[in-house]
Length: 302
Image (cartoon, rainbow, N blue to C red; front, top):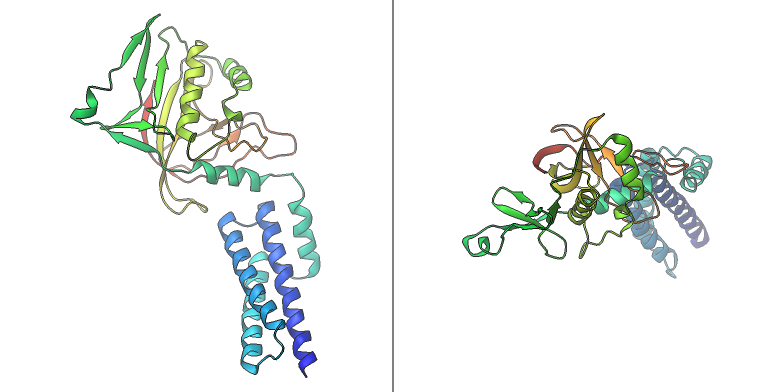
């Protein structure tokens, strides 16, 4: 009888293990939402650990056997239904898809999770007002800060986001903008919560464009909750008034995972923020995923 109990528990372990692997594989391949896949994986690992601990016991009580089968059955039923796993072949297919790079949703989704961090601001008070003198440098370069209401945007390390405006800069054509973005290395920098976030990426791209004589804008928006980010959050990007395509919004934020991260995106209140790669990597989709609805365009500062 004891051997029968252990055999049944062993079958439960195998079932939970396979479905947990399927959850990980489908998360990587993009078949399930990142947040749901992570939750399912964590639950699977927790149940698996508890079942293995039960299997290792010298004597297994009837109550423990009952609970093991109850929780194992619940997990297997819920996981298989959600992951649409009906046979071992479905699990194999999930694993195979996770090793392909056809869509690249996992990498792009992880990059987007990294980008969704709260922007930092410093309120303008009478004490700080005197220290925020905007200057004019030779030859007539204007240095300004990014202002949203009565606050000034700061970078990850606490410095004021500073824009060096070139009065001689002109609006580029789309082809000129593409050439600039291809040669610019802002998107190759590593995202770091402590030192370099989306506000810093947008600052660097703005200043690089203005330095080359290309008129640019700094944009701050508010995004609503998304499938992987449960609260609203701020985001920074850039805009260019092209001579042949009109106003285009560019997002070059990257987590530096070896992919060109210059993206074009539609920014319109009420519409989803879905970046698309300007220079798609071979074998990868150009769609980076939905970062949430645009709730507000807080500033477009030229």
